[in-house]
Image (cartoon, rainbow, N blue to C red; front, side, top):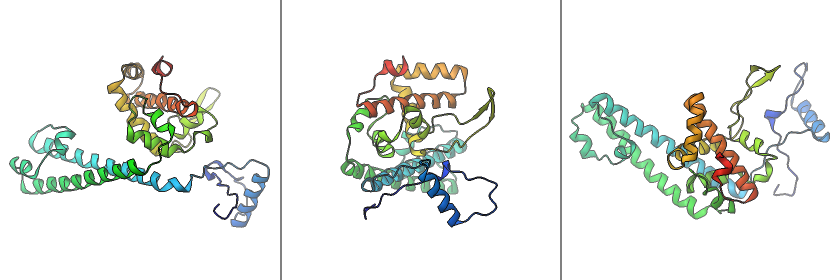
Length: 271
């Protein structure tokens, strides 16, 4: 691309050759790709702008560290519940000091394991704060950033994540395509009104899927309309399905917000 060539990124997940071929190799694959490209049938993937790839990957690294931080918090909570029947939440865990752990009079090996968790937890917390500073200073915020923040459950971090992972919203022909890319659409095969199997449920962007699930979990606490929608779904289905349905609602709303440049409207989203 830097040399002026027009590059096409083939979407290999959407390309399937005839399974009865007796011989296949790199040359035959190249001929096949050239043939379907000439016919205008080549499924193509999105080529993310090179100037933003580094920041997008940095945001992904931040998400990975946040997940690891949660893992260590849960580990400490579990150890204290098992050893002392002591129930504390994540905020209290992060405020624990070495002196407070020693005061619990845990068995020596358990105390050492807990200290190891706390040491890693403090390092992760410092690194996450550092990455937040870099992202805040370096990300070139597009108008979509402020628009996304008007939706319930979406703050600075989630808005930046959605903005960076989406790229340009114009690459999605419709809201269904965006919802599918966010892994918010059910994967199944239907024939004669009956379910015959499932498709590739992992096809899509796992980071957007995480972002909208996080947004849904926060929206439950700050948006009464979102809570009522979740409760209606939960009364008929499993809680995890209800949470996914709420994430789907927010993903569809985000698509229209980014496409039309308009802030979130709770009545249009939840009725």
